[in-house]
Structure formats: C-alpha cells, structure tokens
Length: 356
Image 1 (spheres, rainbow, N blue to C red):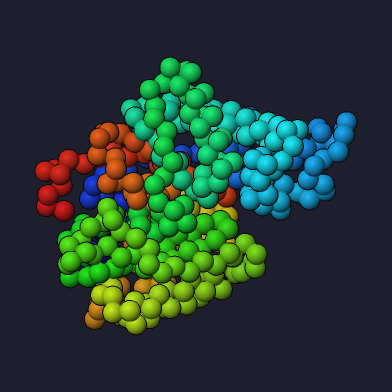
Image 2: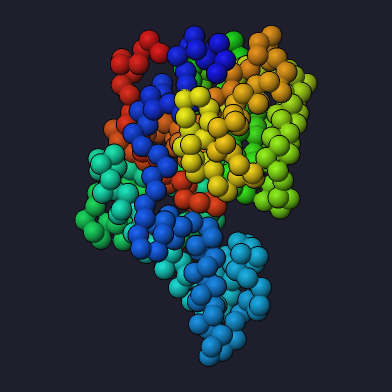
C-alpha cells in the first residue's frame, strides 16, 4: 500500500467508506446443486433457454436453428420477442419466467442472511439487466417477491451498465481528495471484459459525483483471447496509460487516483482472497498484488504517484447509486453478468462522517 493510502487511512476492500458501511459482499449461497448464484446469471439464462429449445425440438422445429443460445445475441432475441411469431415469443417468455423464478429464489435466500435482513431496496446492475430480456426477468422477479408479502423495492441501476462501476469507484474516497481536479480513472474488471474510463466529476470547480459521467472509456474482451495473468495486467496498463494521455490532451485535470473493481473478496493489502476464478490466470496468488503492479507501471499524475484502490466490482456498481439511496437506510445491489455479484450497504450519516 502506498504511503498516501497509509496517511489517509484508506485500505483496499474497506467496509467503511465515506457515504456507506459495506455490510457484506460476495455472499456465496449453496444448495445441493452447488452455488445458488450460478442459477441466476447470464450463463444460467442461456442454459435455461437452451433447455426450452431442446423441449421444442422433440416435437417440432426450433425457431433459432442449431446455434447455441449464448451465440444468438440479445438483439435477435429481443426482436424475436417483440416482432416474431407468437410461438417463438412464447419460447423466450418461458425462459424469462424460469429465470425470474430462479432469481427470486436467490433474492429470498440473500434476504435471510443477517446482513441483508433490513434491506429496503435492491438495485440491479450488470450487463444482462441492461437488455429487454433482463428487464422483463427482473420485473417478474419483483412481482414474485411482492407476492410473498416482502416490502422490497427492486430498481434497475441508473447508469449505463458498462459505466456504473467506473463511476462508483470514485465513491471509495472522500470528495475532498478530488478538490482542484476535473476527473479520475475508474476500472471494472470482470470475468469476460475489462473496462477503464476517465470519469469527469467537476463542474465550475465543484466536485459533483451525482452528475459524474464517463467521457472516455476503453474495453477489452479478454475472454476471447485467453491471456495469461501477466498479459492481462500489461494490456490493462496500456489502457490506463492511454486514458491518462487522453485526459492530458483534453486539458482535464486528472486526479492521481485509480479506483479498481474486481470480482472476489478483497483483502486490506490489495490481494484477492477468493472469487477470482473467472479472471485470466491465478489472481488469488499471495505473490500477486494488482494495485501494486499498476501503481509501479503507471506514470505520475499531477506530479504524484497515483493512488490505486481496489474493491469488489459489485460494491463499486452499488456505490454509483449512492446519491439516489438517501431515502432508505439499508439497501443492496445485485449484478447479473458472468457471475451474480452482490453487496449490501447501510448509509452513513453525514455528521458521523464529517471528518473523513
């Protein structure tokens, strides 16, 4: 950990953040068939749709042919749902209904956990939630939960699903640390993609994270290339160097801070205890520390070595919603992507946190 992090009291994977207490994250629920979350992620939806298509093939023709559901593409599925014949739409709706049932089951199990029991609102993020298919499945799950008599509000995340964690990364540190700057860099590392972006937060010299926006981003779909861990870190470093150059070229006063979201349980020293199995190579090795590697590889920003702070990727997606969660005390986030990320929060009163 850098000396600047020591002096500011900031640690990787912190439970106490400027605006919230992270009550829990990366909960792993199991049943007899394995991890419950594996039944309610993007892969699970494709598996459910494949299963329904197999049933149709036994007595008729599959409207999607032989192509696996994972390769069809969401746009084609949405078009078939909205514009296709009724039988094709019924096939997709059957998969949506089954997925919604599984998703509602996961929510019920999470809400039994001690850290989740007081949850008043769940925000849904992740790439799948940004599609019409995801919206319908989530809405149906919300109805199922309400039919249980649970006073839980379910909302879709406000930001673009590809950008939420980049914006949420800035909520890991007190706003005063961005004074005199216009933007900072956020990173979102997932099991399929790596994204990094320049997040602008200043307006007329005022730090305003509620209106923060990504002004430049880069995406690398590492799952298509099967890189080693070292190759992945090198590619991410090049992405970050390019963003630093972009900010300088555009005259943006970039803060010497890089906030990184990554799957798994993040330790205070920046190592990943568990949960990084979908990342390229072994990211859980005690000899591997991503924040240290990035800090050593990046140039100085605004005359300082950059502070690189790491937290769980679902936590960062949730943090992007902080400005709109002030009307509830306890809330949570679920991210539907390669896996099913989760985190729950309690708001920190402003007067309790004034000195942070």
